[in-house]
Length: 302
View 1 (cartoon, rainbow, N blue to C red):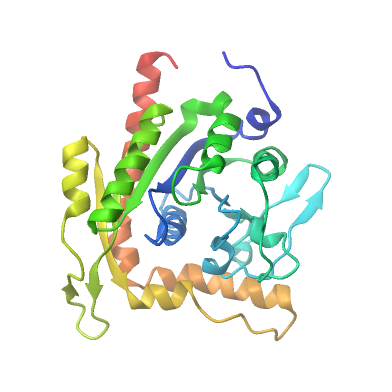
View 2 (view 1 turned 30 degrees about the horizontal axis):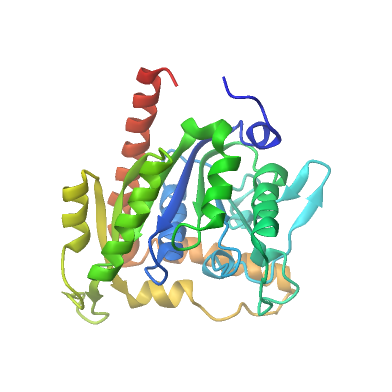
């Protein structure tokens, strides 16, 4: 049995940890992480979701969830995450943490060397009051960098809870980088739930027809060749882009109130997009994949 650490104690009540990764930047990994969190949040089982943004130099999760400008509060039991669904009642189920909440101005750059990044990731895992979660989604930087190695090193005591989702786009260069990402997961023995092909065509906002902008089915073919589950193809949806990249919330009624309204609105409006309908099957496959990994771990006696 692994030795208990501050991180393993903090994550004891987290059932599953999903690491979302990509071989290169610009493939929409953060939007996939956000959609996964929102789709799981909408399940009838009402799971508790956490989303941790460790893309320290390019944090975008707060923006996508409508939480820009929100600050993190300290409690006697550690940092309190920001809840995207705080207005849905007294029992919020979507917690978020990002370095974006710690910056004085969102335009401030994060210029840190490896040791400071490592310390920040450790603090996110050990000092945030996550509480009981069914799923903790971790949005990582592109590629396989110091952040990934630090993350897996810190999570070693809870390795049996870990799994990954790889995000790519159909272009050949993105697929080559996705294979490198897959190689990394295999080297560190991180179970992969499957592959998502993002930006797979373009949804016409007028008629809903999908047009292919790049080569087609590259992600599906890579998944077949590498023995991975193909979780789904997600076309570019202008409605989703507008929603996740919306303008700043109004300051009427005070900044915190405005931000909470914006976040609450995103949760509702996302379910009305065509992307949400497509992503439901992706979320179902992710949940099924986690159950399969969990069953395999039980059989192996992990």
